[in-house]
Amino acid sequence: MMETLSAFAAEHLSTQFAHPAALWLVLLLPVFAFLRYYYLKKGAAPLASVQHRIRSLPLNVIGLLLIETILMLAVLIAVASPGKEGRLQSISEEGIDVALVLDISASMMAADFKPTRLDSLKKLAADFVERSGSDRIGVILFAGEVFTQAPLTTDRKAVRELLSGISYYMIDHSRSGGTAIGDALLMTVDMLERRRIYGRDQALVLVTDGENDRGIDPKKVIPYLRERDVNLYVVGMAGDEKAPVFIDGQPFITVENKQLYTSLDDTSLRELTELGRGRYYRAKDEDALRSILKEIGSLSRTPLDVREIRTRRSDAWMAALVALLLFLVRQIYLIHFVRRPPL
Image 1 (cartoon, rainbow, N blue to C red):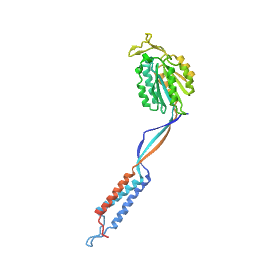
Image 2: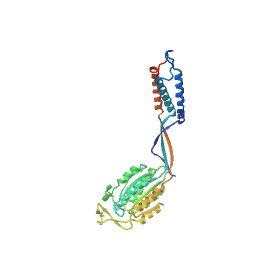
Image 3: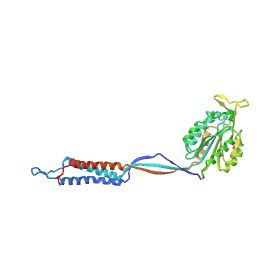
Image 4: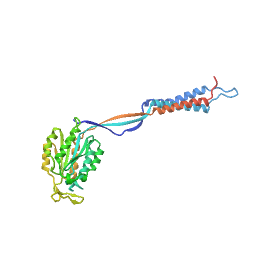
């Protein structure tokens, strides 16, 4: 069972009417204008007998008729209640916790992956994170020592930036060199356990090119990993032939005063995977590594559940304000421009 997470897509705004049926009453405005015209004409006061009775309305009364018609239109628009309606997508999808455990020892500077194993791994790991959806991703780095580069998070942008910052020069390889796979596994399982959410699956993706030569034996960590139901994926990253290691164009010299050549201990990694009841992959080049990470990423993909949430901001007050102002104009117009006989 995987926990369901929710995210929200961008809101799309459009002008809508809450009661659009009220706008049909606009068709009655010509009827209103005609009846009002008829009433005003019928109610016109006769002039002195030396003059003829007016046959048409004066301009000031026609202005009143126009104001009243626009006033009625504003009232109808206010009743229809215009406003900005937004559609907000709630995207619910299932995900897992994924810990990327990445080897940054000196052997990762070998050039059988171009330009180096480490550079290829950084780029493809970033692609893996981009496809992670609602997964929480964490990044653990190790050589002779282990440290957390990124805690479990759904902030893919932050994880990608932290991945881009990975460098051979992050550690002092003269003191912290080597490959402590067991320590890395132990620290990662502990991090996953501390950040566990009930019912949410967890996976550990180990990418390394070497055999364990520091710290605890990785096989001793496997029972701890299985006890906590952490799914194990191991990627052996190295070409078929031994590859020399160069740093800034210069050969990497070991403590034995020899240039470092690196190859993959495929046998021990397969044994480790079998003990952990996980899956083992062999990546001999960048294309193979890309396919492997894509396959691992697809293991946690599930169909999306997309729901649409509608939001609304009413602008009816604007039409009501216009109607009020027109009513005040009408009253002023009646007082100052439309002459009526005294009562």
